[in-house]
Amino acid sequence: MAKLSLARGYIDRDELTRMDSRALASARASSQARFILVSGSEVAVDPQDPQSLLKLSRDDAAMWGTSSSAYLGRDAQWRYFACDVTGQIPEGDVQPPRVPLMRPVRFWAHEWNDVDTALAVSGVAVLQWRRDARFCPQCGEPVEVRFSGWEEECANHHILYPRMDPAVIMAIHDQNDRLLLGRNAAWGPGRYSVLAGFVEAGETLESAVRREVFEETRIPVARVEYFGSQPWPFPRSLMLAFNGWTEAGESDLAVDGKEMAHAHFFSRDEFTEELRAGTISMPTPTSVAASLVQDWLGTTFAEVMAR
Ligand SMILES: [Zn+2]
Image 1: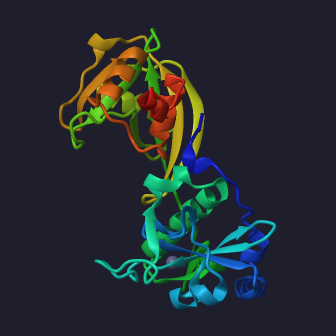
Image 2: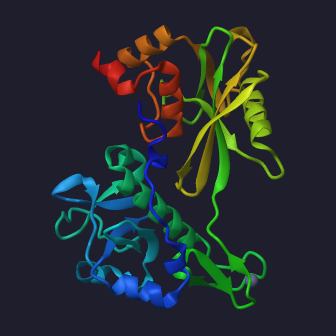
Image 3: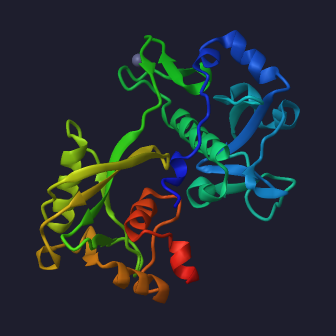
């Protein structure tokens, strides 16, 4: 069973080339260079084969500004760069091949191979940060990009690095191995997920898990076990997933009705029945939430629906 879609895949980030401006320029100009196109949190896919990212040669990518592209790393064959085309893709009825065919990473990445997923996630993350981090947080001066986007420096030599915000996401189990799912008040009817929240300043991950669950449902969590992590660069989260166990039950759950509209411990049978009936819906397959729920379920949502 697939676990943590966006955490699949490995790319040698090749820090030595990244930090050596001459080596970087030569990699960028070489016939081994391949450029992916990133617009916001979308990447271009190959219009002939939408299961693969579009990877352009230097000449084909020239119109998209290769000189400011971010170096993502290398494999045995290629050197990969990401061009930021945010704001450059005309909107409306213009179709490929005149414009690239863009796909939101968060809804499509589970269909791509491991390397393409790693490239898409890194490209979106580093370019998003570069667009957002325009001024030094220490002195307010504008910053300049270094190392093809993996550092920035202001006139007073303060250095900035791409940051991600840690967020916890947790599958909470009761004593009968039922799973706690909640419906956020801002979501449409029937949409449920596991609970999640940002780690606060000065807090441990385990404390954040227990605090978030208590804030949202008023139940205490005892044992907490790490499950895995994946980047979620929309715009810049690092999701840290846990399983947790509680001695509390259904009658102990209390939601505020403002942030959390409803919370409930689902048995596997109940969950399966409701999912198939369409009375509940689950988060996108690329999400950590989907991985946590499917791990508890022992099968995938797709398999449940296909039965
Ligand atoms: Zn500064």
